[in-house]
Each structure stands twice: as C-alpha cells, then as structure tokens.
Length: 497
Image 1 (cartoon, rainbow, N blue to C red):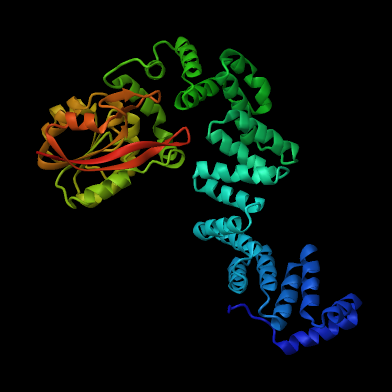
Image 2 (cartoon, rainbow, N blue to C red; image 1 turned 135 degrees about the horizontal axis):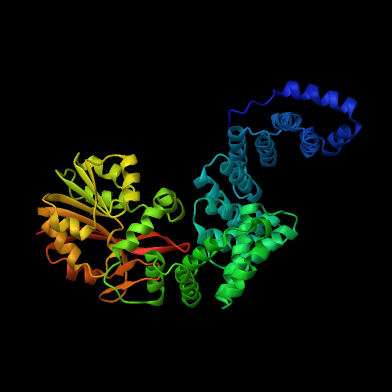
C-alpha cells in the first residue's frame, strides 16, 4: 500500500518478547488484548508524548507489521512522521489510513495539516473542507482553512472560517490573532481591536506590526464615530513605542475611510491635510473626489506627482496587496483575436507590467506615461523600443506613428468622458488595428468619479464614445481589490473601423 518499510513479523515478535520481559505494563496490555499491536501502539504514544519521535515511529511501524489494516495506527504514524519533518512519508501513511477509513474526520485533519506543510494548497483545502463536512464543530479545521485562505488572499472566505473557529473554540489565541488581521482587512476596526486584545489576553503576545495595526484600528474606528481630531490626538498614547508618523496615519486613514465609504470622516481628514499643504495637487484632487466634485479627468499635475511618489512601491502594492493582473488577462484576450502586431503602444505604461505580456506579439513596443518615476521603473524592466513622457491624449494627437495595437490597462480610469481619448486613439491607429482597454464599471449610462480618485464608466458610455471602433469582445472581471473587496470591471477589445 505504501513505500513505507515495515519490519517483518519475526523481528516484531522478537521485540515483543524483549519488551514483555523488561516492561511489565507492556506485558499486561498484551495479555488484556490477546495481541501485541495495542501494546506497541500504547508504547508509541508514550514515546510521542515525551518527544521521542524516532522511538514512536519504530513502535508504530512494529505495530503495523502485525495489524496492517488498522487506520488509526497509520494515522498515528503519519502524525509522528510529520513531527519528524518527514512529510512525504507522513502523506503516504495518512493516505493509507484514509483508504482504510475514508470517513474519519481526524485522518482528514491530519491530511490537511501535512498537505498544508507541503504547500499543497488544493489538497489541504479539500481536506479541511472534508473535516468540516464530517464534523461541523471541528474548530481546528475551520481555523486551518481560514489560515490557508488568508495566505491565498481569499480574505472574505478566510474571515468567515476564522470567525467560525473562534465561535467554536473561544480560548484559542491564534484564532483571535488571525481574526484581528482579517478584520482589519475587512475594515471592521472595532472587531480588529477586540480580537487583538483577546489574543493578548489569551497569552499570545502581539508582535510590533500587530500592535501597530491595533493602534490604527482604534484610531480609525474613533474617526468613523466622528472623533477625527480626538483620534489623532490620542493616537500616540495608544500606540506607545510602536507609534508611526502622525502624517502617515492621517494619510492612510484618509485613503482607507474614503475607500470604505466613510466619506464624512475622510473629507474632514482631507480638509485638514490640504490646509497643511494647500498647493499639493494630490491632496486637493483626492479631497475633490471624496466630496463628489464634478470634473472631466484627473488633473495632470495630480497624476504626475502621485505616481512619481508611488513608483518605487507600485508593483508590490498593485500585484500583492491589490491582486492586479489586468495586463495578463487583457493579453490573453488580444491573443484570441490576433497573434502578431507591427507596432504596439502601451498607453499609460506605468512601471512596464505589460511589457513581458506584449513582447510575444511583436518587437516594436512604445510606452507612454506622464510620470517620470514610473517610466524609470519601466526602463529597468525593459522590453520597450522607446519610452515617452507625455499625457495620453496629447501624445496620441501629435504622434506620427500608426499603431496596430494600443494597449491601455488601467489608464482610462483617470479620464471621465472617454470621447476625446478614443478619438485621439483612433487617429493614431491603422484601419483594423486593435484597442485593448480596461475600465471600472459604473451603473447607469455615463461615468462617475469615485472617492478613490478613479473614474468608473458604463459600457453604454464606452459604446457611445467609441464611434470609430467596433467592440469585438468584453469580459466582466474583478480589476483589483479596493479596501479588501473586489472591484468590478470590464476588459474590452475594440477594432478600428
């Protein structure tokens, strides 16, 4: 059944004779059951409980040589192999146990733990879910599943699993610790602070990043409750030696509260920050977005300054925290229509995330962006024949190039009315060229400026603005995460008339 080597029966019988002579209790267990396997198992469990894992493994394999069809022994052996960091052997042993007893929740839990250690997320998730099916009150399985989903950035499902674990086993400090982090991501700041406090009370000391997160949660919750000034004044006392720069706290509070819909508190913070730097285009524009001022596009000075500041950490933020993969998704759609282009434009190229995806379609790729900081990062990444610092519409209107592919991933979100941009794009393209773009989806017939500072567009507005194009394909997707929640969007492929 497995490549695990068990001793031959003769060797085990000799061991049993030796143990009966040296350990009276062992002999009594053999006599009670009329068989040596239970006594060997008991001996293995004693070794295991006292940290003698090698001795425990020998006892369990000896017992199995006499009782190869005992699923509990195979599970015990799997657990001790796991303790010895022999995960492949642990996996083999627990699979035998499950072949013999497929409905044993404890064995599925062991499989989940072993698979989790081996980074086999698919097997681990399936095993955790099987445990829960068999025993809905298995707190450890709910927690294990929650932590696995947490690592996979499936935050909503992870939060539900961890909450279930806490409800079933309230005194588990690790569960409260995970709940604190997940509640923060879910912007449930009151629950975050309570969970961290419970974790600490249950003797799981918080590390510095968690203490900082707790202080932020208390501060942000006070702001949501309308005590913005008081919250900022009290922050240093709450955070103590873990305190961060107060301007960073105010900046991040503005971002988080605006993204989560607490616009009144965000606006108060935004006005405070703008009063400190009244000429700052980033602070002014983002406040305008939060209070709902109408505008046709994001100001160029905002885009330039914001992305110059953001460029060094742009990739890690977008790819890691926000789970952004528009270039890859859009390139797959493009490939479904054409596989070769003579001249390509990456419009709003940013740090060049699309370059690798686009290079397979041709060798001539030009990148355009308004931010010199982003262009510097794109130059490091490589893949571009030319990088140009320019506003998008201005470049399209003046370039002498004629492109057969314009690729605009996450660029249209800084334009309101798409008409001028799409007319300029049409003028810079050859007939039959493709335009690939992404938009955040707005309800209704038009477009709207969101508190995030990004514009969302309806498909109807895109159709109205794209008079020089025919839409070949549009695919609904989640563009990124915003405040821990998916942002609905569209990937669209258009063809120039």
